[in-house]
Length: 472
Image (cartoon, rainbow, N blue to C red; front, side, top):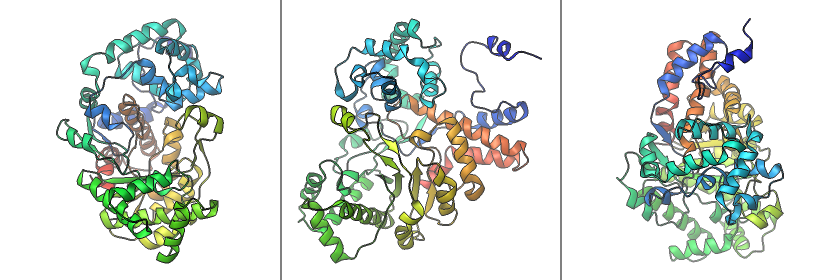
């Protein structure tokens, strides 16, 4: 018997080429062949958060700390949980010595062993940047210098990386009142497409910061009076503007996937109560539910794919939110009910021709109980890829197991990286391709599907499927 330590002691330097693939030799060989088919396929990324300014202005990345630590709440939240003040990491715009913050990160790098973010950062350093030194307190400065040297060169600016990464489609997330001039300026400048995405949350959620002022700005942009009908018209007009500039989807982030259809008089009365600031919690919930219904109606009318990201309680720590603002690492998942919550929406639009509704969840229990059955019946419903806390190797495997027996592979969205960390885009897509190859290989090895079916599915998942679902 060969001791396991000997196996790992004699591995070549660098990453294991079979990482994330099954350990059993026969299944691993099948998975390796499936992965090789898709490893270099173009990246189709129809939902993400890379700022359009990075590409339009081809802005160099500032420093290694800004690139890997400060703006990555996967990283900062775990460091915070271990007693590190977020201010020392530059969160919330705090001034910080980037090298000192990087050393602090390296000192606590061991905390990320086994985490998805630890895997991604290892991949970014080794596979994207070509740095084979392992991050540790003793190597912190050397790794920092190598990253800093790389990102200072022209070939590491966003546009050059966009081409090197093989990105075919990249969607940004944009405010409805954005003039999209940077998208216009960027058109034709890259080998792939960069598309805007309509994100109306702050204009349709009464609990959003600055909601009333945002609605006033929306109505002023179209010279509309403050009536519910004109409010809907203004949103419709902005959606049309986005479509004219290449948008294919509208994204909606909600804590609760609740929908309700109100008659015109009730909707008008509720709208006036909400914008006056007099609405209670129940009325604000009702307004959110009716606006989610209206967003679906608009998608039926104009063809924008409707993506729904549900189940996150934002800004769980009031103190942290006050000190560091939103997106500082304390958004926490909550249970959701898609089946009852979306029934009014699906009763009205679930069978509508051309309507595409992509459902994303962080509550894993809903995959097999609700989302897969919904997608397995309604032609309009598609299963969103594992998102946020779940876009990790083991979670992707659990996701596949939960949805495949009910809805197969064709009712999914394809992988969605949902990231603003630009260097992580190829890493996250590679992770999904490896995890999906592992899952397919197991089905082949167990005699549940044929190899040629697995090959066809692997090819479909990385390109044709997301193109169909997002109407690309």
